[in-house]
Amino acid sequence: MKETRLGGAFVVFGFMLVIFFPAINHAWSAQEEKLSAGFAWKDGAEIYAKICAYCHEAQVGPPIRNRELPISYIRTIVRNGNRAMPSFRSSEIDDESLTKLADFISKTEAQH
Amino acid sequence: MTSKYIALPKSVTEKVFDAAINDFRSVLGDAAVLISAEQLAPYIKTMMPVSDAEHAPSAALLATTVEQIQKIVGICNRYKVPIWTISTGKNLGYGSAAPAERGQVVLDLKRMNRILEVDKDLAFALVEPGVTYQQLDDYIKEHKLGLWLSMPAPSAIAGPVGNTLDRGVGYTPYGEHFLFACGMEVVLANGEVLRTGMGSMPNSNTWQVFKWGYGPYLDGIFTQSNYGIVTKFGFWLMPEPPAFKPFVIQYEYEEDIVEIVETIRPLRISGVIPNAVVIAHALYEAPVKARRSDYVSGPGSIPDEAVYRIMKDHKLGIWNVYAALYGTQEQIDVNWKIVTQAFGRSGKAKILTEQEAAEDPAFVYRAKLMRGEMTLTEFSLYNWRGGGGSMWFAPVSQARGSETLKQMALTKQILAKYGLDYSGEFIVGMRDMHHIVDVLYDKTDPEQTKAAYQCFDELLTEFSARGYGTYRVNTAFMDKVAETYGPVQRNVHKTLKKALDPNGILAPGKSGIR
Ligand SMILES: Cc1cc2nc3c(=O)[nH]c(=O)nc-3n(C[C@H](O)[C@H](O)[C@H](O)COP(=O)(O)OP(=O)(O)OC[C@H]3O[C@@H](n4cnc5c(N)ncnc54)[C@H](O)[C@@H]3O)c2cc1C
Picture 1: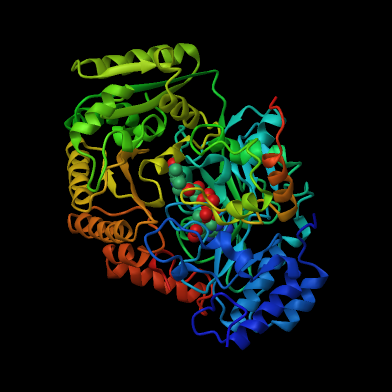
Picture 2: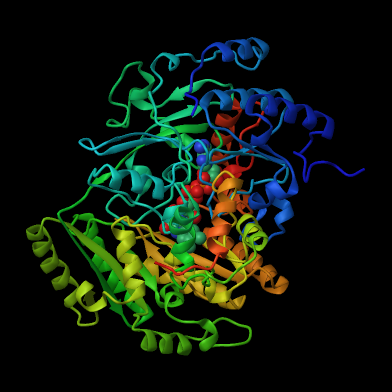
């Protein structure tokens, strides 16, 4: 992931919007962190375990695995929520990961 | 003519908004600027008893860097477009991820989610807004740091930045979260980047260890407010104790809340019980074990007689006091003696530990919350009524038995008038108790939705008339609550707003501030 720097690109921008940025603070540009990348999901199983399972494997929400729920239905419910189930944004579960999650939930396989 | 937007910001024409969206796209790229109904659907669902359309955003921006956010506020100033910032966006029962006012652009920082530092020795973390408790917990475990989190009941899917900025709470000894916040980085409306406290000094290494810095302490004004966009957030973590002993104390009668609070207050203030305790009513715990429809049907609130049957059937007290001891085994043994003596005195209390209650699902999830372990079991609350309607009614009470009883009775009476149940608890404090009531209703039922709205309104009116203030509220009632704190505070809030954000681009309406 790109590191935060208030360098070149920003100077150009600051020039454009100088009226709105009377005193741009560059104090932190020199000491920005050397950082790890942001978070990314590994696969559908991980998302299931770290979000869905807390309710759907805990008698809070209904079981959803191994029921051959249609992928499109799963996607819709995740994005829109359903009654008390919260909706999940693409910033939380990106579209690609949602496809993997839906696939994981819908396909029938012996649980281990 | 149909618009390409599902909503527009107040007083902004479509043409002006087009220009703003174009500029946002040039900063973030097309994929990170969401405007279609499908993309915005997750931002629209709320649990409040008002039409979701009233809180529909015009767009959502997925920013990942401070630099992008600085540019975004520049664009907002230019076009007078308001933005509503969320971090992990799970403010469920307080407005969820939807903005306070229709047409505001959601600035969604969920993807700005790096764990910048976790210091094992000094036991602190510095994180970006999108970090969830789950992510941080995984990181701590993976690196064997031996630190515990304190988190709210939606744990895994919520995060420390959003929760603490809304002055949320958890259940460990660090449960009053803002007490343990230490240092913020804030993008101001004019694009400047402020680091609070010791962070203002270049090269300082004490940003996350000393809260106050020099001069007026500023961190507080960025909580429950709209004076800045927090982009980094420091807070303290609790070293894992060598031993942990969760317990529950059950009482049989509602009036016993007096004895409970009188007994627990000295233990909390002296630190014998170190954690943010919970005194949960049977109806708060019941949904983990029981179904409402097995006990009542038809309209109206649940009768006391049915509540007593639930208690008996499911081994609940009418009050269930969850607390824990932390430390070495020796420390715990000493404090356990003090606790059991104090609660044993009247003969009314039933004291249970893991030995007796290890299989009890309510005890299990409460014990997890008290040691910062992920669980979403409390979402069972929503199976009680069904239909996904919820508002947290959250007045503050003195930690004095007579006061908690008065608040409970008044709440129950007003809820009953509207056919709603008292799903309440008292939590957290030493000298205060947050009285937290989940006003549960079926949002698919228009009549019940209307009743819930009126009920909540009356709760706020009646409580404030008696001098009971609310600590936090959903976005539909923020103005009403701001009003209850009087004109002088409102004016000061407004004066600060004008000084820090003259164009009013940051979250207009938050806490009633514009
Ligand atoms: C069953 C259930 C139980 C709950 N239990 C608890 C509980 O125990 N304790 C508790 O506190 N809450 C509880 N909640 C309420 C809520 O879900 C949590 O407080 C949750 O942590 C808030 O969501 P979040 O952490 O994703 O914060 P967000 O939604 O990201 O943020 C909350 C608010 O803070 C402000 N904000 C966020 N980020 C920024 C930023 N970067 N800069 C400036 N302002 C910002 C915004 O006004 C935003 O609306 C519960 C909810 C449910 C459904």
